[in-house]
Amino acid sequence: MSFITRGFSGRAHDRDPRLPPGQTLVEDWPVLSAGPTPQISTDEWSFKVKTESGSHEWNWDEFQALGVEDVTVDIHCVTHWTKLGMGWRGVPLDKVFENIETSLDYVMAHSYGGYTTNVPLDELLDGQAWVAFEADGEPLDPEHGGPARLLVPHLYFWKSAKWVRGLEMMSDDEPGFWEQNGYNLHGDPWKEERYW
Image (cartoon, rainbow, N blue to C red):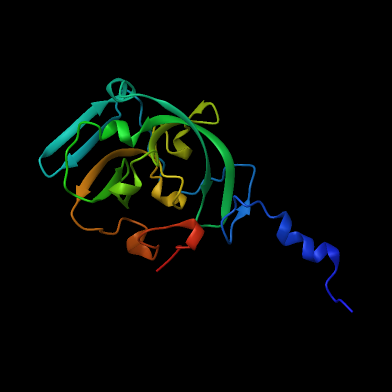
């Protein structure tokens, strides 16, 4: 005699395999920010990479000229929502680092407004990360990090820093804003690396 109905046992099989554990699928794009929304025009925007040997900086047009890609990826927020199959346009970090030499293994992303988040350099290269300026075919709204945000879709979305303005190379993995306030230093959604 079975106490499990066919409907109950079928639910686990219906779960989309692209959903990491603990995540719920959404169709909209929730806005979650700590603090006021910076309003940065593309005329004002610049992007800087600081290494042990100096700095490299681009304005908006120079940065676009590095090479733009269209990608479709899933995004996963630590607050348990996932949005699947989002189209993005941006400059791959591979293009940014094409002519940059560094022996440092870690990166601190800096944003307009003061936000920071840390990511190992090897998780930003080899087609894993972009500085994105369009999503779903539209320029990024300031509420979603426009004019440009970091896009690191294989990590929880707090690593995809809104209003990004640069990367600082580091010898050690130091915590950024949320990491100093209880979030995991790494943030892999498939391992549920949400908090300390």
